[in-house]
Image 1 (cartoon, rainbow, N blue to C red):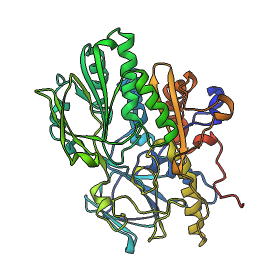
Image 2: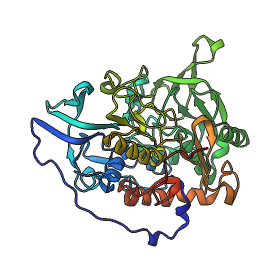
Image 3: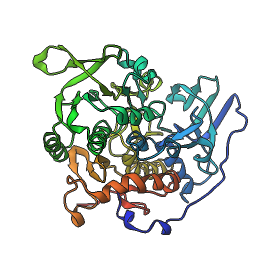
Image 4: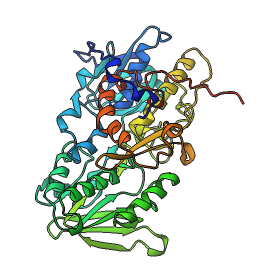
Length: 448
């Protein structure tokens, strides 16, 4: 979510307070011109931008999402680090749904794209002219044996920033831990915000150093991945940081079991030569990132690819088979990092291409894979990782400040102070475009 406009005084950015429209009664059948599945960052942002677009006539948008609360999930790292309170990271869904957009608190059960229809678990049939699928993904805490039980026990010293129900325990555990082995995990496979597993690690190290106990704690970063980060430029910088700060790197080790009673974590060694060997490690402190996957009702639908994600063209966000269906965010097959920052670049592309299809034209707007990971490396420092498809850096401030692999205090305050403000006041209201700041970018590819 970096942008050149972040250097402007906050006072110049107007705050909008608007009334929302809701489906106060839910019919057995409903039809809308545009139906959006998901009221998270992706769904609400698309609804807001589309609603504000003059070209979109006969405005008729509905969002399907059973949630009553909208969460600013990038803020959970701040909560787990003791930098912010959880109360600042969520708001009632009713205050986030854009003006004029109907919200059905319904849970999708099946898609019927041949007939432009959706069935919900509540038995309501919703049909559409155009569909945007953006329900996010599932954090699968049950995918690790013993993890759910460990998280329910406040004395287990096991915690996770990946749920609003467990994130506050992370900070309590960091504060209370003074000596022994501390393990921070990252699962193999796709996860949302792939930098978050080590953000909380670096912040814990920084806090333990402040508390004067760092030398008494042996820290391990156990990841299912072969490297520190998927983008080589930043991975190299993080690897150097890991070595400098005395953190053990346990690569290609995937957490499969937690024994909170005996304080043992079991990993599967994913290295080809290991033949799936199990490795046990004792812990005094354990931070776990659960495996993540597509929702079953998405993965089993005709909209999904073989991996279970909504099968879309990686440039246009349009479905590869059903041309009136689009997808963005964590649920999509877009082969980039699943972050809120990515949505700032995906949404305007989706809007332009959706409007083109409505006019009977071919979609021409293109998404280049932009994503950003504001990676906290300690108090008052942050590595602002920005990149596009192919792991190619696409840095906003490089020409001004130099390479963004160097942690800086300015970037730290973007993450801690600026981005939460922007999210609630501009991002979900459809007026924030990441690297372009408050100005909608030109997403049409330039001719060579």
